[in-house]
Length: 474
Image 1 (cartoon, one colour):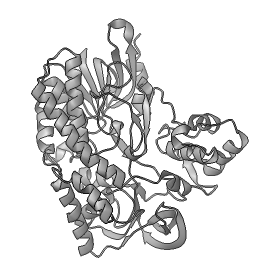
Image 2 (cartoon, one colour; image 1 turned 90 degrees about the vertical axis):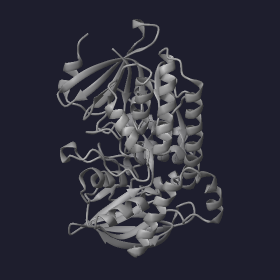
Image 3 (cartoon, one colour; image 1 turned 180 degrees about the vertical axis):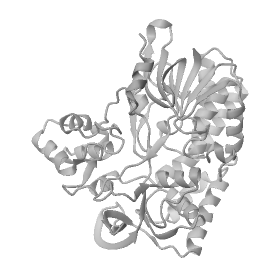
Image 4 (cartoon, one colour; image 1 turned 90 degrees about the horizontal axis):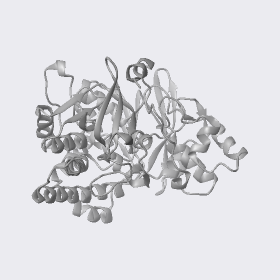
């Protein structure tokens, strides 16, 4: 049995693993990628002979990755998926976890005394007519291709969204030789008041702001047009290309009716990120609504222990706040886990961890407030009857609206799921939950928070049936 099992080898998972392993406890880490680093520090394949990728502007990433990979007390399972967690409270005073893992060679159980969920986030899905067409991709997917495989998703590219990742990504795509047709941002560029409010976030984060300015300079040098207060309203496939319709919006991102169309082979969506909380839901953690943090996040105490006994959480599942915040949370969670296992944590180490959390929170808070999504306006983009909402089960907007119309007692997203199967496909609602909840809120004149979230059950991700047999046992 391991002392700690961690799901996720991004900044939070690596920092927590080091804190617990350095206290003398055994740690096992499971991650779906081929190497440590998470989505933010995507690295080239090991077969290429390159240990590191490009981590700019995070100067601390290389050291964190090397210490994690070189530590003898940390065992890793890469290219592996955790598809559920079982607990046996009768085996000790604490919970004992059986973590169900799908590995390249079959199913496996990992038993541990503590569990840390550092499962990261995924691109925020936004449904509109044509969003399921080939060539429509998310910013995270396009950036992953570029970082890990050095592959351009397309040649002629349009970027739409509201998250600053779009500007950073545009700079990276231009470096790789892409033609950026247009960048359409849903919001205005930051005004004077917002700039002044962001000043407290600058100390200690100059390199991050510099990276943004470098990207803007590159975009200007290539004369890429940037449209402000503009959203994507439709994509149409035409002769192996996409006709992308862009619409102007007001301050609240509501369409004002002025449209124009651009032609591209790839449309990149970047409206933000959503915390990956499926495992936390399945294992019984309480969630809280945090719109600027990406949606439903995991409730926790100051040591990042969740409401579920001996389950800790760190990184994006507590609210999407960037790599530095994830690193700080992982370190603090690791210290708290080590203490719960019997280690004595030096006051100096705790004070340092708290200072790091405070500094990262200042920066993350400014960025979250500045780029918060207008959820009702984004949900409105899927208003047409034939627009696909649940792409796994091909559930269209008309069916969801009819379900709400015919069943006035339905008040939650989960009830819609039971009635018309939205969210019951392989992705388990990752793509449609937000839109369904927003539609319920609108029709019932309630908040999105009141619409709730989809429940999660084992398996939280599709795995081969053979893996169930492998972990069967008792």
